[in-house]
Length: 216
Image 1 (cartoon, one colour):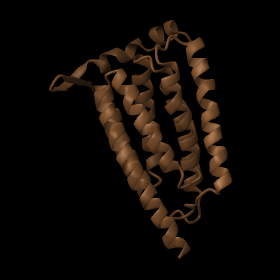
Image 2: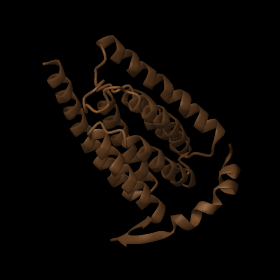
Image 3: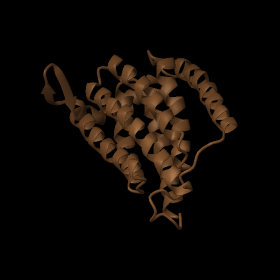
Image 4: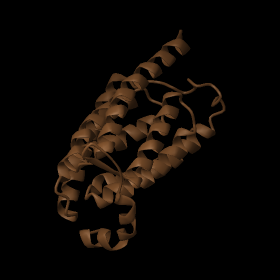
């Protein structure tokens, strides 16, 4: 899909990108504000290991996919489609868990070797996705876009499997994404990912505590 395809098929989104309110010199659109609120609600559910986080993830991903596409962040835009599909799978996986009434049900951790393979997978995906974005789109930040995209795919897979390691993965994603979105002047989204970074630490601690309490 080249730049012309994105421009021709997503022009209807543009009215939602007009400034809705301004704080200081920073203008925020309706689309970014709504995606922000849904994302905060999603993470709140994930912290509680609550299944409602998955439909919220699907809704926020759909909105952010539109926002990123119009900001020429094509890796992040396509990633949102993957998030929607993986969120549907995660929703199904969690909902069919016979112990889903227990908040810590199924939370577990990787072995040291599994962690190494996970890191290698992420580092392999990064240049592959960067090369694709550089050659297939008109992205001006192809490899910077590809880095959090690759790690997000890995993080979503870890989250769906209720692996504690999803949280440090998201921490790296969130910090890298803050710099990327700052380049595109998506300041409310920079703030969102700053919140996400803090919540990644909170979630990491909370899930480790749940695991310790279950094992004890």
